[in-house]
Image (cartoon, rainbow, N blue to C red; front, side, top):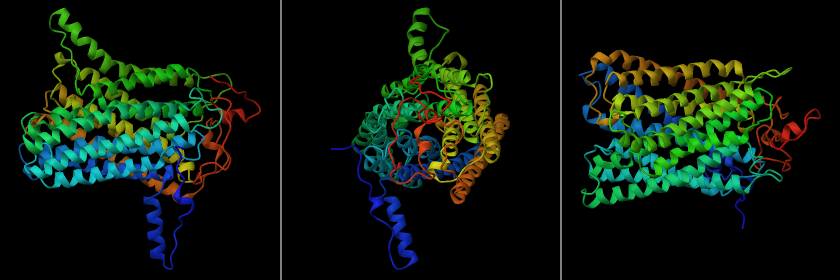
Length: 545
């Protein structure tokens, strides 16, 4: 038995007498492919479309909030739009984007010809996509957490369960790949930090998604038959909403920090030392998975009470809210050490690194916001501050994933995305994300109610300036997303990448051609250190550091 399935791509080629038949054959091959790069690209494409749709909904809700007492939209659709925006950020955008990048890149980084159980990953893709389509159908037909159609509410809950199953399936294939498909000589210690961070991320999803699925099964049965134990459709987010907020969403960001360190080593021309400390950082962020397993969306502490009560609340607050923040700080500290100038050394900044760095910093802003949100003395619970932290986490993750797509563009598309084109887009995306998130955080400090707390916060005209600023930030971020999509399309059409590894790269994916063939490598590389490509240069020596 093997964990690697044979790929149908090598034997099923488009055929037919007409261009239409050949096109249909090519589409069918793509949709049924077992090539991890194709599966990853489909996940990413779906995530980008989901992100753009969610940004449109966010802009509409921001316009509604700026308008104050009036309603620009159908008042009866507001609840469904709020559900669409909240679920869209996590399940339609963040989750498929990070899964897609990991599925596309990790087998290449491991020196593998394929990923483990690629058809399981493909099944995860279509379970996720089918669940997302059904979720949209349910919301469009008066389903959701405040929906009035019982059948559509059932469909809404079931669609979330399908997406959870899809995420667990894809995560299972990823984790198995890291354990079983590494190149000869590549121990877990020598695996690239991005792949190691993906292992932590995938393991976290494998822990969390079955818990979410089980919760949704209870909710479905209760809503279908009695609606007494869990509060009917209104109780859906009360019992399962923890997956849509912090600290649970922080586990999705772990691969961004691994990607940051892999790229930093290339940019600053150093072997990645302190790998154990970096893994500690990933693990600390992964503690957010335990928060999800306990089915808690908030671990709060009140300092204005007796000392014993403070200690009782402080321990879980620090464990679940502060330790993930510490993990992000640890990873950035390792990067700072890599960035320390050395004699005769020169930095080679890339557009992918700038995107990933800005994404990690925006995520860190969300982590800080999450830590502040849990301090009840600040009176932020139930305000727009939670929206700001979620915005920072998800927008930062998106920027970080875009950094990975720019970094691996030669291997995934055959083209390059240079720093001259991607740096302006990185700056625009980071500025838009920061403005949108900080404006909502400030509005939260000024007691603006959260849309997530019932959706009745459209009468705060005194705070309209912060809503306008948040709207502008989201619009800038949307423009940056469209700009990056244009860069990816341009790179795919240009096919201007060279097969020679760029200066300073260290991991084995750069030893294959651009773009990578169906089976990834003509000859499986043999690894003797954590930086095998540097070992091929006569002036460097191998190291297990």
